[in-house]
Length: 125
Image (cartoon, rainbow, N blue to C red):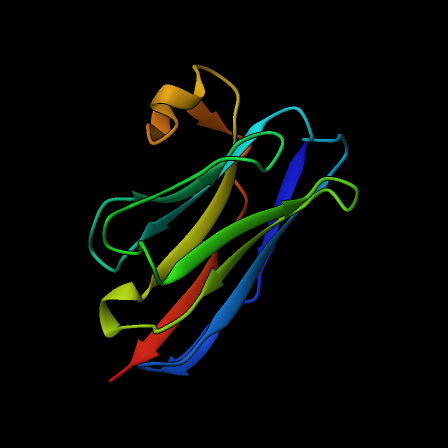
């Protein structure tokens, strides 16, 4: 399955964006999905994950209460709503499929594959 992330852009602090991650080639409805980000000059980090049914989600402490992950299995798409954006949210955002492990360890990057190309979010102060 190929993943394509979109929706990034330049936004002022306090603003909002909605990222989309569309899957092509195969359905991901049976898989947990995750969003990660890589700030400039830093390593990639976990942002949010959603389980296969959409009933459960998990967030990094830095985005909890501001970001919301959702999915539409019929459309084969995962979303990340970014609200109350801060300059430190500036990063390339990636979506990926969790192909190993369980929901218990869903924050672990090494359990994911089929990484999309990423979409750049820039938050100005």
